[in-house]
Amino acid sequence: MSEQSIAGAGSAMTVDGDRSARARAVIVLLCLALVLSVFLSLTSGASDASAVRVIRDWVTGAMPVDAALAARDRLIVYDIRMPRVLLGVLIGAALAVCGAVMQGLFRNPLADPGLIGVSAGSSLGAVAIIVLGTTWLAPVTLAFGTLALPLAAFFGGLAVTLLLYAIATRQRRTSVATMLLAGIAISALAMALTGVLIFMADDRQLRDLTFWQLGSLAGATWPKIGTVGPVIILALAAMPFLSRGLNALALGEATAGHLGIPVQRLKYTAIVGVSAAIGASVAVSGGIGFIGIVVPHVLRLAIGPDNRYLLPASALLGASLLLIADAVARTIVAPAELPIGIVTAVAGAPFFLWILLRKRGVIDL
Image 1 (cartoon, rainbow, N blue to C red):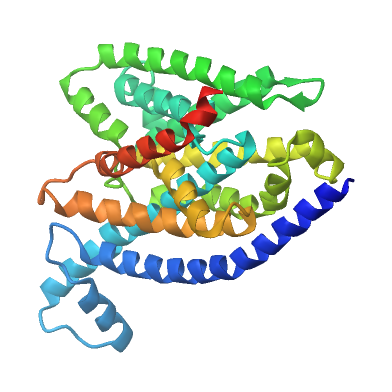
Image 2: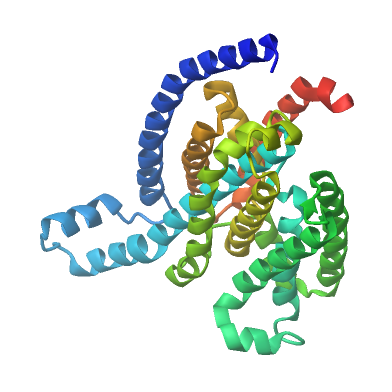
């Protein structure tokens, strides 16, 4: 190793040390922001149900003055808002963390969780159930009931992942570039098949498809959380173990391999984890964009690129932003509800354009 490399590594460690204190402080602030976002989400909505009163009665054990009103508030808070909040936390964290992992894996700040086609595959599975659930896929709908849609979306994403891995892997080595190109092709094919199904849909199904594709947490229920929650939690729990490898991968695959990083296993774990988390998220919420791009980039500007801090910070900020977007979606046109994908797109698209303008010199290369 040359003297310049050693000096550069020492300089990077010094910068990392300076950023570490800031990163820990930012993570603490993000924890507080998440608590406030959860409180905001529990207290927001078209109904005047008081989450504060419900929690106070539960903590103190006090008997409510109006039993009927208290029962209504408990129903709204426990069975409608709380599952929605928990699902928003899980999906927001999954989208942001997967965005950070994909950007580290592709070494590109414009990478997105949907880049490898998992979102398109999940959408195809969900659209197939919505359109064909009463005809060709009626046995699936009868067998799984309300879980048929999330399960179809999840297995659609899983099928795309397995196909991509088979295409991009040769002699036990996975090419990230091949996976990216194959993901674009498979996404186009999945979108074409989705278009065929949309063409076959009736008016009611078209309304369901439009609302689902724009993204929403309105369908959050405890059974759905029980179905997709463990998948998302396991995927998120595995991501921090990739931080050291992703940090080394920023120097290039060859350098990472010389540093002792099992590059092939890192790619496989990252791809499977992202596919599982995104497939499960899309299965219950539909398409929600820009969280995976915006959150990691904002945090890199604040705390640096060290994935040891970037991944947990992304989970916290992604969860908070999605809860805030959901609260806005529920209240801005109350008593109706705006699809949450519209809110995230309105906020995220200008920021994405700003990233493009900053990185256009790199992109032109």
